[in-house]
Length: 201
Image (tube, rainbow, N blue to C red; front, side, top):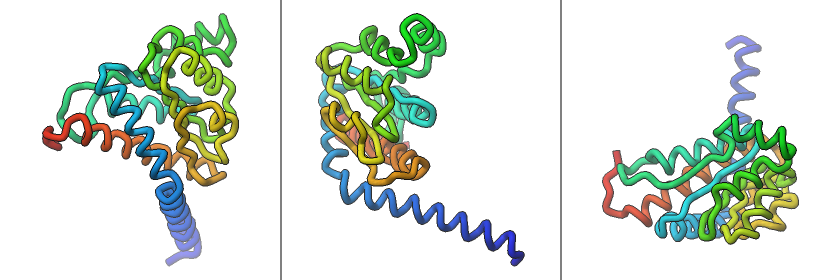
């Protein structure tokens, strides 16, 4: 094996091992919060309320991924669940950002779509994204249950959300990898609770 290939193999293994370790730490520290978040989603979606998910950058992609798993299908063939990613409409985001400022893009969309009983699902690796936190404040004021998916100690977001899942890491890639794993776990728990008799595909 060449020295270059050996180096790449070592880096790949180290990266994957770090990801595994972060997920293991998330399991140990966040299992109760994950179940609390799942129960909030089960209660809301089971009652016909909806999920509003949002975040910036990679967290925006995770918000879209999570909403798509619920509105489409995760594993079970079951009815669609009402879930919206607030980042998905470029016209909304750019119009609101232009007229009200980028800090208000998600808060304004929560005002537009959020109703009491809905769930606002805020994703931020640092917990200090101003537009994410403004939306959580707006959501709580409107009677939505707020769930934070964060890391790096949780930042300000951990202080204002109802349920906080804080990945115990300071490395953004490791946090993001754990975030999507948590989203998948939440989908599985929602499906198991709301559709126990539906078959998997």
